[in-house]
Amino acid sequence: MGDDELPAKYSISGETSGRETGMNLTKRLAVRNLLGSVALVSFFFGLASIIPAAADDYAYLDNSTGNGTDTDSFGVVDLTTGVYTECGKPSTGLNGLGVGPDHQLYGTGQGSTDDILYKIDVTNGTLTPVGQSGIHFGGVGSTKTGLYALAANNDLYSVNYQTAAATLVGPIGIDLPGFWGLSTNANGLLLESEHTLYKLDPSTGAARLRGDGSEGRFGAEAWERGTLYGVSDEVPFAIYSISREDGSVSKVSTLTGVPENLDPYGLAPIKDQVIQQKNICKVHEIL
Image (cartoon, rainbow, N blue to C red; front, side, top):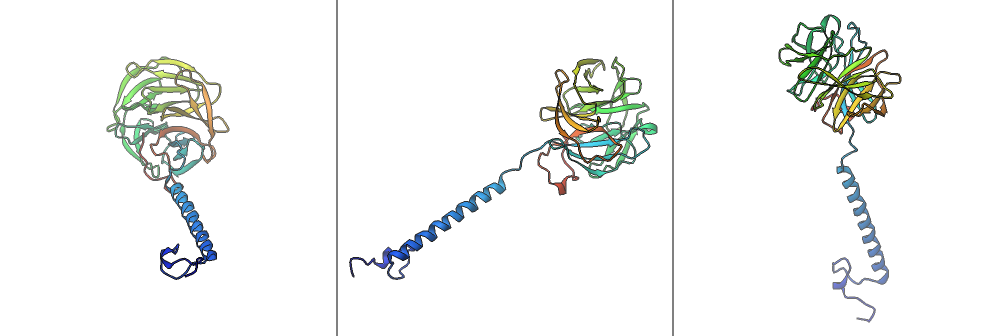
């Protein structure tokens, strides 16, 4: 064996396949480096596939003409992007949305059905009557502990989600001109009237002024992961964050996809933050 020959046991491949020339050794090293690079790229692609997509805030949204005769549009809105997807058309108009202690979605009717509490099928907007309260409600909302509704005479009521029985809390003490809405999911009950935010006392009904916003007119508000979202019916429709402290607002996104001639009337927060479009009308846990 000459000085320039290498025994088979020193082969780079680990196999006893004969002698390894300098040229073959270089080729083998190049192939091994290439395979290593491919493996590294595959690893990072695999890692990317298990990293969660960017999380958005979603909510159920009901849109209505407000006249009690036309059908609403019910669906899911991506609050971060403003994209609305319709899931169904409730059989009657709804005066807002509220979340019951059972984490199900409820709404009160409009017009001749404004004393009826409905349970809402979130997959298609189908309404199931719970019962009649005997009170003509102008809107419904909820705290983390129960449903509340505001009557046409501006008295606040708590509403039993199982029977629709209404218990008087008290007058809010202010007039409500124009467009207004109650919040869902906040620790307390918030009321937005035109551009002004109030907090309602759940034991007396009394409204306490929080402040005025510079823009937006909100008929639907929801507390979600530390942000009070409001959907404005001023054209173009838009989603805002609202300060609970002073009522000031900041635009989040432009609302798109809502059928023509409908206004946002109710908003309820969804727990999921990553929802594929094909599953958007599935059942999602409500906060």
